[in-house]
Length: 500
Ligand code: AMP
Ligand code: MG
Image 1 (cartoon, rainbow, N blue to C red):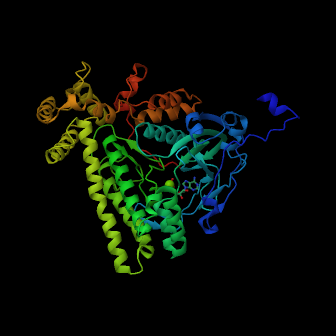
Image 2 (spheres, helix red, strand yellow; image 1 turned 30 degrees about the vertical axis):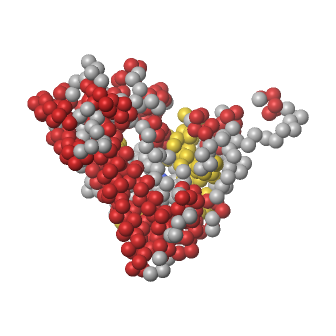
């Protein structure tokens, strides 16, 4: 390779590092701002995702070359890229902001994956854009590592999510509460179109742009909507279904997104923007970590309603293209939104029944009541959510390590719960489902925090170990058994902060 590169006789075309097939940059100019990433003074590769790069058709030799580091630190715009930052609006904690946009993110371009799906490659933290609104467009290293860990863990847990391609440090110090090393996160997404992208054009009464955007999203995410009588309506149906499916996967993992603003609600149904997100330790439906979520708007148990609220904001933007009659358009939007509750409930229940080793075919009413009462007991008893289901799975497998009662404050409650469960469950029939839905490892907050603190001291071993371990969250691996444990009192993380 080196020989070839240095050879003056080189006749082959240069390596096409990333095979871009951009489409968003071909949309009208009011959809984005052309943007060149800022230069990083002294970039250093922290972690790269070779498997994902291969899936995206990125040349392996190039991905492992110094050119790739220059690209993912923003120093070089690779061949075929059309760097832009995207315009969007959004409701933040319920208040509408008509212009947000990518203030610290630049979309390099898109590639086509083996399923013929376009995927975005975006730099996050690569400097100011037209949408920075007084921010510096940069990212501190902590949020870069956090997003890397959690997004890859979510993928391994089977949750639709944006992915982590590369993490670099820039060699620059960014001004936060205290001066902090900077980093850039390269994110891969099915697209970066959000509910807030639709709101941006709706706020400007730009119906033509809304039609273009809807068509773009249908072609990109829901081509099945094209053939029907009313493609915009089936598009809304598909987004409703995708969000219901997504949130029904979050809750049974104890995941709290933390900042479900409409600008962080992806049209594709992927989890996006891992800022102050967290997985719960002790279960409580009102659990919140985000420091800025003072009113618990985005608590664990509030998420299904918030997703519906966000979808309602999307439906409002679509009214002008659902039907020429306002009344009829509202009726259609209501009927699409009405499907959310049953779609969410059915999948939420099924996922929890799998976790509990209960039948999903018969007696759903009793099953639903039992899920509810189980969650009530877990909350009252301050039981660690992940350990509870882990030990229940061990118990179902007659593994001598199973010890549920120590997780409860009151051992009598554990006994009582166990009797109820035994009356309903047929664990031996459902052990596979229990194992598949009850992970052994989740990215616990205190572990993420420890990995970040070590990285700030230039020790990336805990970060790398965490990412490696979380790639197989359902697998028994004695090397990682320490990562199962709940935090000790002094390790507990009470608050998480935005990824700015
Ligand atoms: P987020 O909380 O990450 O969803 O971001 C909300 C909005 O703030 C988006 O428009 C971001 O681009 C913008 N933003 C966040 N951090 C920065 C930053 N450091 N510089 C400029 N804009 C930012
Ligand atoms: Mg965001």
